[in-house]
Length: 207
Image (tube, rainbow, N blue to C red; front, side):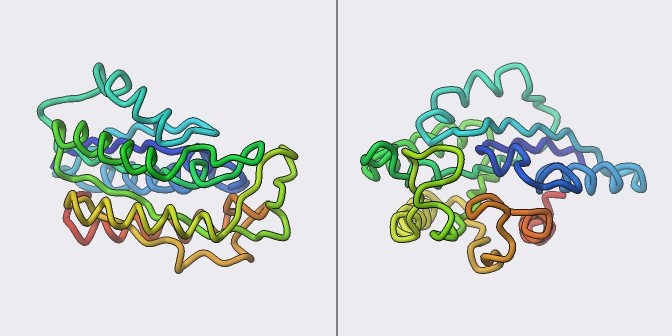
């Protein structure tokens, strides 16, 4: 099996605050390397195309160009999106990306993704520790409310269902003790996300 895996996300997917292995995508990459090393029938190309601070607006704008020179027609493609938390944030007293635009961006992403593969996954949103995110420590103008995160996560689930994209629920496995700064997972949290995503891919025989 030859598989290309592409991950589009923001700071969590970039690896923020996993002080042990550099993030759940990096943990997934290590798993794939080990599997490839032990199996003559498996080959994987892995691309983590995440940028800290990105929203659905940002990922949609760069999606096609990011893939243009990376796609290999001989490989099965898996597209994993992790988007919504930054969209849901309140920045300078306004939603960073209004939910109507968020839904439109998701539909646009799925439309473009389907031109490449039907193996489309969206990682669900995680709750925040509001004791540390109203505002966050690194930006006094940025607020992350659970009420807003839940609203955007529900929209994400709905769009996935409508478009036959797969939704990966990680919110139920991440608690406050798994967060480094109230928003980003710590090493323990990244490990939990990695195992959840890996199990979804294994279950669907994509890795």
